[in-house]
Length: 193
Ligand code: URA
Image 1: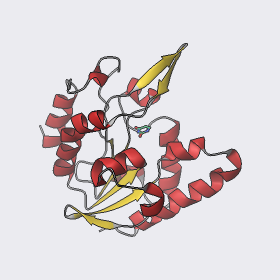
Image 2: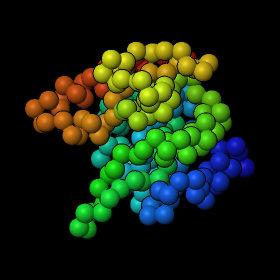
Image 3: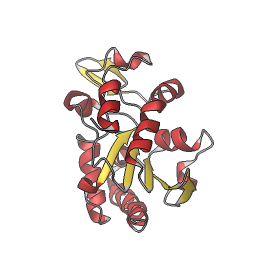
């Protein structure tokens, strides 16, 4: 069993914070075990919670489009999240996303650190504020820092926006927001070893 398989198995039983209780399952990262690029999102959404895989719902489809336009194939990327259980509130028969808190990110951090150590990506891209803050600290500001590579723990890190933010953008500004994500991902593609 590889380090990553052992981590995945252990994470499936994680009770380090209360989010495991209402969630369907732990959604661990997925992708090649020695990918050059790791994408870090926020937390699984409704679809991901049910399927047990990261970025397979609407945000994942938009991410795939953006990656493709930037010249990155999803099959070359290890995709994961800062928090590995879906945090939600129930409204009628719907489960609505709730942003994870600092304590959830902190409780989940050993899994992310384990994935980083096992996969050893040369490049890490954070998607959105939660992932950016998880790795760069609470002073991280996405608008000021997105698209700019920086050295980070023997790797290169590029912060960018979250595809869900584009889905929430008013329709008339959506193309522009997607173009900006693609531009950041082209910067990432340019760092491929
Ligand atoms: N949003 C995320 O941050 N991660 C997912 O896996 C899905 C949606």
